[in-house]
Length: 138
Image (tube, rainbow, N blue to C red; front, side, top):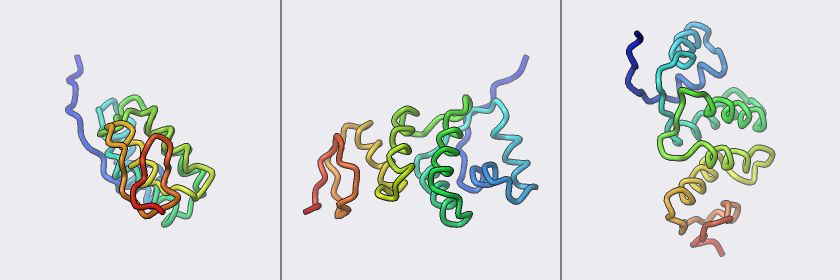
């Protein structure tokens, strides 16, 4: 009989090492944990930072970053800290093929929809507007 391990949060360094397999030694350690049955929690902040690191530091094309992260968060042992997975996936789809929306903006948009706090102060005219009221935008 196997004992259930407690949930644990993932940091960007673990996510990025796992997804890039770089460097191999750290990637192997990350894979041992992520590929296990251990329940893992991914904060939306870490999701956004991982997207940024993959696209900026590793220069991975945006569409591939989004596809990779969408696949990652759908793992059976991964749950998001705040958002339901379908809403997080919808948010990521918004920024997949366009740089109109930033990773952070789409996740904040999804959090607004999920929490019911639909008023957002922003000066960003490109901030997603579906279902939210943008305040501060002319």
